[in-house]
Length: 437
Ligand SMILES: NC(=O)c1ccc[n+]([C@@H]2O[C@H](COP(=O)([O-])OP(=O)(O)OC[C@H]3O[C@@H](n4cnc5c(N)ncnc54)[C@H](O)[C@@H]3O)[C@@H](O)[C@H]2O)c1
Image: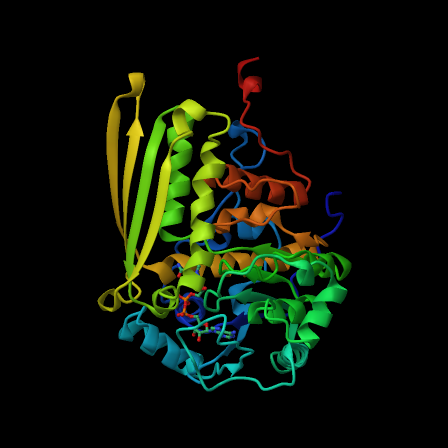
């Protein structure tokens, strides 16, 4: 792909559309407003706090990313969303219990104005919840057209010059790509015939992409990870990315595993278990939704450790992931890892990780960065899958036939080099021979 010759400026409002207004979405919106009011810091957000080095180490040029590439400013963000429940963003945030009442109070009037549009929902895909705020239509195609109308209305009422959609809805039941997902034409036929393999998240994706709106997928569902939507993204010049925000335990895995591999330490097994008590955890009690999540979580180690290249070190590793719904913990998940590694001469060692994390606190800055970077990509004319945003995902989308990069440090280098490339700066290889000539 050619380097973008010109990046259009970030003029006007950027409308953020969120299918699913639960814990992650509301923590994200509340956080943006708290930061805008100067009451908090955007910790965890690369677009707000990150810098990148330009030129040589001796040049001392490390601008903030937001000053280097033309990103939308927080003051220009406006929000809309859909949910199966009627709660406004304040009520939903209070329900989710992520932010404390004092913080929520500071943004109550702002959040209360954000009311969810009616959702396209199918109980077969999310079995353990049900709600009253649901669209009606003859078939899935009609529902998708209604979402398109919602998008057009939101564009007008929010006076946004650009829009981005980020799926923050529940994890849907496991779906494998099938023939109905293979082309845009077959996809439309399948929507019209109410084919059971067309998930609600795909309707939002179709509506967004065909409205020229970039789409990020925060859940492990297929959604935009099917040829039909990818072709539409390409044909409509729309940027897409996914899937499954990389937070908590998987973030830890993609930090630790590259270190073991770099030092050629072996891995016999990695057992991960979690307790969490939020709505996400409740949805994941259903085996169909859990299977979708499990697939997304399991692939990480295989790709990072490459057992086919290192059979003596990783050929026999046993990897298990468990998620347990335990209401008392709410959003404050606890994730335990038992890691059985081995070193010199095969001598075994163990590492235990006990991560008392806050799921939505880790996810919210990811939503912000994805929204801002997708908007940037769109203005730079970068269409289709944005692999440089792999940094944010458990299961990064790639071109067909290409294996994903899961190593957080490779992903970070890829992201920063993409920003340098967009602006025509030298890429950084970390070779550094020139300092010794
Ligand atoms: N750290 C994290 O929190 C994290 C990490 C990775 C992925 N995710 C994923 O992000 C998503 C959101 O997580 P959450 O903790 O906010 O969950 P949540 O249950 O609090 O919110 C999801 C919301 O989506 C709504 N919803 C379900 N189906 C819908 C539909 N078809 N249309 C519109 N709304 C719909 C639900 O009613 C709910 O309010 C989940 O899929 C989760 O697996 C979260």
